[in-house]
Image 1 (cartoon, rainbow, N blue to C red):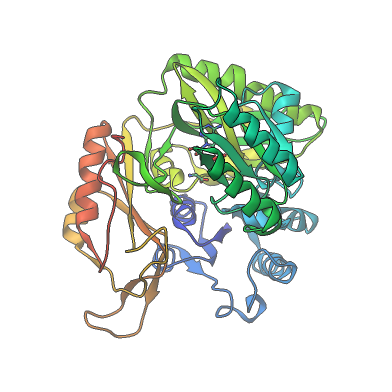
Image 2: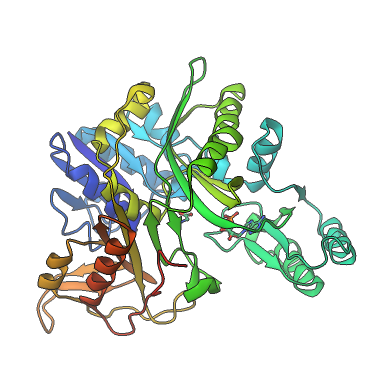
Length: 452
Ligand code: AMP
Ligand code: GLY
């Protein structure tokens, strides 16, 4: 069978790599892919603007780009498509593929609102009793500013940051934890009056601050109207979103991930099932939603009690780079179970042990960063660690250069070194040794992935 993966990050490299390991997969097209998928066994990139004529110019978010991809999948007989990122999901790529009779894993644009609209997801949580921070949507800046004044005047909440979230998709820039009234006012004004994030900030959700530790639970979902739905959670993972050690500095797309999460113990897991997963499933069924894909529960866990911070309508990045190497089951079979209704009986199994996947980033990230630097990899050391490099922001450059063809940095998060160990410490030690085997100008990483 031929497969198609949509996206260009480390998550998509991991998905393509895992698909390619299955015996039934003969080829994995990746649109547009990156320097990792360019070199991966059985994989072929379809770069927009450079690849086959039918894909030229446009990406998977525009109607033309989506139509071109669907036509390509139809012509080549692609039997399974997996959509990585949220933008094409929100833009309805799954609806189009399904309308053409193509097997595709991901929610349609309506169900993707779990991620594309914070107001929709907050309403859903309230309606179906999914435990979350108390919060409200504001569509007028004046009312949001009044709320901010109340928050910082009230002795009960004055000392707590105020959590302000832009409603729409913002590539991780939409949440502000305002420490004082001035910061809250600036945020509301920038989002709602100055439209600093465009229409995504035209309405905001303001909610209570929740203390605790964050955990990511990814899950496979098969919910079809009129049938009993199934959500099968994966083992837990943890992303480290802040740029610097100890959880300091600006938020990033993720500086590294680990799986499983030792502090997400039996009690927290049961609480997650009762307070988050079950009501989510019941709500999806009650709303008559169709959801066949992956969902991501972003949890805040405090003394074994879970609250939901957010849903994402896809696999997480970089969590996927830590989770898929631990997945023992066949990935195309899991995808088929999601699509065909066999997910309830699917033998989802995980290797014992742990994976640590720290990310190497380019100088300047998450601000404006350096790019175009050649990447050197010491293959011998890498092989000793058994780690896999999942490439995110790097291209494969065939042009002869000092040292021959190779990877060149092209993004802020350049790659993750994903290493397996019998336990978290062994995984960590191998992952950091593997990251040492990678060199490029301005490279840096957090040293405490899995320890923070
Ligand atoms: P979100 O996009 O909703 O996951 O928010 C991004 C980040 O903001 C989360 O990963 C948390 O670190 C933080 N955050 C969001 N909502 C809250 C909250 N209610 N209480 C504390 N931290 C939060
Ligand atoms: N790691 C967080 C996300 O994928 O959104």
